[in-house]
Image (cartoon, rainbow over the protein chains, first blue to last red):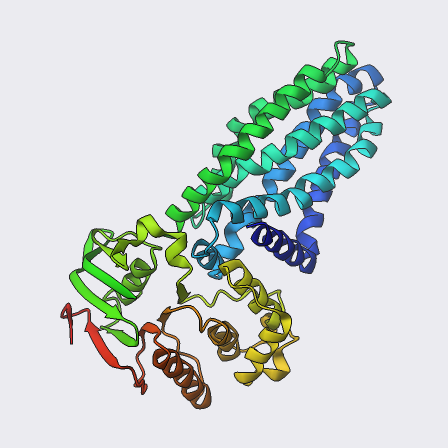
Length: 222
Length: 211
């Protein structure tokens, strides 16, 4: 089972590496969106500091969603998804592997550049640290929940818009607690409770969503 | 080893494709599914794999429904569908290693290269499949058969299309060896191919009978 997991991740990362442009699009999207806000709002430090967590989080959320189309679509088109569903390992294990690979290129990469972008908003060091923690806990949830939407809209025309309508409402709790953690830290309350709630959401999503995604994929393949 | 189809019916949209399909195949049997375009050959094969649920009836492996068995049944199944399941961006040998490992029968790079060489793809081993021709891509997909001889049930949807004459005889040789070793093969084709099964049968979907 672990070998299958390892090979799914390795395969997807290899495929991503051979098509680097796709990853860079997501990354640049995130960077550009985050950069536009300080330019548009103007150099008012206090205002930027209050807005920063929300903006960074919304940008990360949209960037992660932008990458969802790639999660199953190509495998569905060339028949490899069909083969995966006929594997002697449970489909949910393969789904977990694909979600991890997706998170590494759409979530983890964003977390690496997020601290630099946070400087644009003049966030203090402690807040940046909490921001990174909240993204580390939160972006995997985005990938996990997003996978359900990607599986449900597989093979549907105009699936890209539909997936955002399906998934964005489910992202709301993650956004509230993620951005809230940074806000709470800045106001002196400490972001721990928000982070713990995010951790709980992550545990719940990790346990339930792969199974739901696998069921959705089987329906899409019929 | 038996695969039983019990009173299978398939409905696509509102249109019934076939009903009352009933057969049983055992070790060493080959079943060729025939019928005109749109008669439901691919749908039947997908039902037999468990990819699609039949409108009525069920498929049984060793007398147990494949819906209950699922992964255990998949361990005994090799399915090659219309889509080749070949990744454009992977090299030919990587495709085979990855596909085999994910299906649950891991192979090494050496095995994959040998299998490709046997099918006359020696020069294409290290090329991304994106640059290969349609027939070569089909052969990359079929190379997995050479490494799947321990899997009893092969379900092949149009395995002979896009292949040249040599590859057709090579492939029928592989299938014949599999049948001689007690494997089972269910396939569709529009070409006449010689298979030496212990019992070679035809299922005509337009008539709904096995002979």
